[in-house]
Image (tube, rainbow, N blue to C red):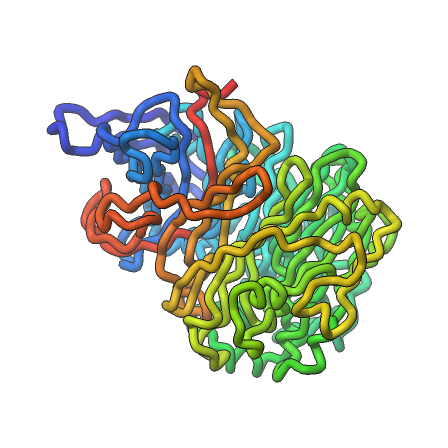
Length: 562
């Protein structure tokens, strides 16, 4: 049950105004969210960039950062509010939804705490806690990752890890699956209400099991499964949901994991599969298919099978227009992008259509730098279906290559010809020269631009967000299908290989032709350098020191959005 905001009063002009909202969750704990509003950098009628961050200090609270993202504003790039969550710390703030629309609530996940926080955004730059989904609400899944908000305001969330405890778990529809425990397998999809309540736990694993030679589980399960869903995308007009399988996470992405320990677990804990669900009944989705993405021409040359193109299918992205029924997925360890022309097909056939190596060759002459193990991450189709956006963290130290050469990047692909091809799409990166030169077929995606994002801290640009809003001459906003800005965050997960990052949130402009340029006016208020640094001693909520931003999202004040 949520309670109202309790406003602070009598504070000095330079003291943040505080207000706290409370929510009693079904585990009996009262959770809190406290705003620390900086009046000099806040006000109605603006666009904001939210960043979900955790402190390096394990005793300090995690917080949502509200940054002024209104071009031309006197406080552009300044932190207007930090919303600290309690009572617990160490949630390891992870993702929110991919895109925010007017009226949406904000879904923000703590991947280690197995908790989803739900916020009301109508009073931006203030936020109000209106729901919490706790581990007791999702006994069949752990490690909440990404969210997709539906038109009715509820959300689907991918829970990448196995059930709270080892053994059989019964889902909402009555089906039963065996699991090997928290952080293991199988993961699930959770349908979450606007108040954080679990509407349904949905099995991602098949009832009959999958190939044990391809789907390793540690410890093993009687029925092997690759079901560790990470990325999620929904087409409500097609009544379909797509989820991509990452890995058995506790083997490869837990605190203290290294490239060596991940390799010791074997490549078959690194997933190669994509799951398609029928969501005609929103709270009773049915698994339609589990299909594998293929290895590509680079696979035989990789020192480790874990770096084959097909490994660790992290993200998925769907086009938006009714006539475009295809789907894209990307592989984190494999460094490749795959496409199927009809996601509604009984058994979608995936083909590699772009290798990150091609993007590297546009600015990096060292031919030993390839997509293998390059930690490719966020993937998104522009609302007008013209472009595919992709962030790449870059190879980290354990892979043995200098970080100044394996730098992260943001790149843009023109996908219009591929989508127009429909079911006749021919693009297939299946020859070695296509790895570095792009696909030979006429409908293959064309590389529009690449922006290297230098980060030599053993990390790089992991996540991103599209600015899906445009402002008119009267200061009012509306949603637009033409993307003109992208924000990125340089952080993955602390304690994992390639996860640290330099903790910056950066802004990039896109012109009408998809060319990228850094927004140098989006500057840190402390360092005065481009990008907002989360390595600072003081925040509106106190001197808690350096913090780690993960999920980012553009939002607009309710009163300014048409």
